[in-house]
Length: 140
Image (cartoon, rainbow, N blue to C red; front, side, top):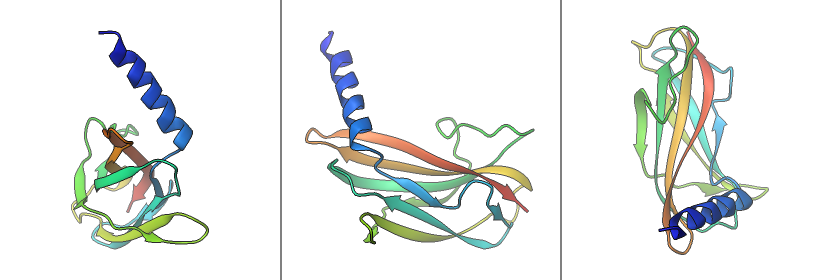
């Protein structure tokens, strides 16, 4: 059936036109996190024309080996939070929610990847949209 590829291209184009549905406000690239210590993760939902029914998020951290960080689509690592999120409005436009998390005490020091995984149901159909945002951090 040739309709599916056409629909996939149109949906992909619509998502890119409507913009991102989430952003990772914190931690940022090059942030230093400490084993066994708390840190704040911030998930941002910019204002968007897209109708997105929130399903949930996962916040995870994974050590990098020999300077190579695993791809979030292959492996998330240690899941620090998984569940719903309820962002609150902020100005100018958009919403956010902060999460207090703790770096595992047993985690290797050195580079790591912090990943925000987001699932929502997008559009009138709707269709599932799974997206990842990440930051490369340093564990001390």
